[in-house]
Length: 432
Ligand SMILES: *Cc1c(COP(=O)(O)O)cnc(C)c1O
Image (cartoon, rainbow, N blue to C red; front, side):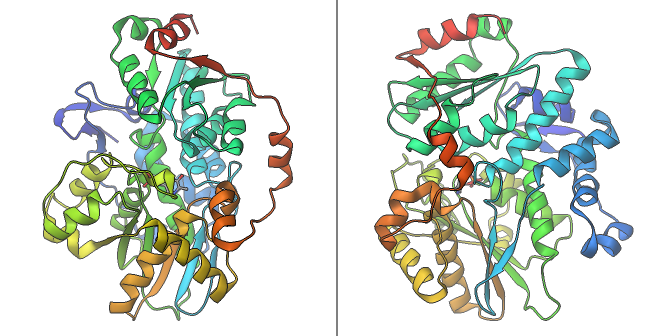
C-alpha cells in the first residue's frame, strides 16, 4: 500500500515510513492511495472468522510486505485480543463496549497495534524511534501500556500537571522502563505546543527519530477498523439495518468506521456525536467551517476544536458536502444533557455509561426518533470507572476499580517536572 499526503499527493510513503514518521514532510496527513477490495472468499467466511484471521485479512492490505505474514497476524490479533461485545439494551439499541483492553479505553486497540509495528521495524532495521506525545488523559495511558517493554522504542509522554485524573496519572507515571512521563507545569495546550516545537527542532531531530502516536499516525488510526468488523459479526439476521453512533473528538474512530464501511461492512449510516465542541455538526448543518477554540466539558477526551481526521473523512467522500450529509448525521450535546442521559440510561436499562458513551447514546436517540426502522449501536469508548467523578455525580455511585488498577493506584509515581520547552529539549537531547 502506498500512502499519500493529503496536502500534496506527490509526497508518498510506504506503511513503514508513514508509521515511523507520523506525518508527511509537508505536515499533511497520510492517506491510502486506494481502498482495497476484500474479495468474495473473505466475505463468504467473514461471519464466522476468528479474530486472528480477521485481523490479518483486513490489515494485510494496508501494511503490504512491510511486515511478514506471521508477524502481522500476531500484531493484528494482539490489538483486538479482548472482548468487544455488542451488549443489547433492548430490541432497538445495543452498545459496543470498546473498554475491555488493559487501560479500559478504545485507544488500546490502535496503541497496541502501532507499538508492535514500531517494535518490529526497530528489530528489523536496528533503528531506534522515540514516540513523543502530549495527552489530556486517555491517549497517554493507552500509549504507555501498549509500548511498555517494546525494545528500540522510547516513549516520552507530556501531560499537564494536576489536570489529569489520579488513575490516568498513575497509568502514565508508574510504568517506568522505556516510558518517560514528563509532567508539565502548564495546560494541555502548552504540552501540545512543546511537542510541535520539538518536531520542527532540527537539533532534536538530528539526535532522535521522532514519531507521533495520536490518530494522525496510520498505524494507530487504521487498526481501529477491526472492532467494527468484530461488531458486525454480532448482527442478527432479524435485526433492522444497523446505524452506529460514534462519540467523537479528533474523529479518528469515526474515520476508521468509514473505511470499514467502504471496504464493504454493512453499516447503513453513521452518527457523529459530539459535546459542546461542535465544529463538525455546525459544519454539516451550515456548510461553513468556523474556526473555534476548544471548551472544557465533562467528556474531556472529546474537547477538540480542530478535529485532525475530518480531512480524511472528507477525502473518503470525494470532498462533497452532500455525499457527506447522506452518510453521516451529526449532533452536539451539552454537559447537562450528558448527565441527564447517564441517569436515563441507568434508570431504563440498569446500564452505567461513561460521559462519552452517553453522548453516543444521545446521538443515536436523536437519529432514531426520525428514522425508527434501524437497529442502533453506540460506542462505549471508555469504562465508566475512568470517569468516576462524573459518574458519581450523575448516579450517586460509581463501579468498583478492577483489581489490576487498584494495584496500579498504589504504585509509585515517577515523573520529570518541567516548566518550558528548553527543559524538554534537554531531556530529548540525551541520546536514546
Ligand atoms: C479519544 C476518545 C474519544 C474520541 O475519539 P476520536 O477518535 O478522537 O474521535 C472518545 N471517547 C474517549 C473515552 C476517548 O478517550
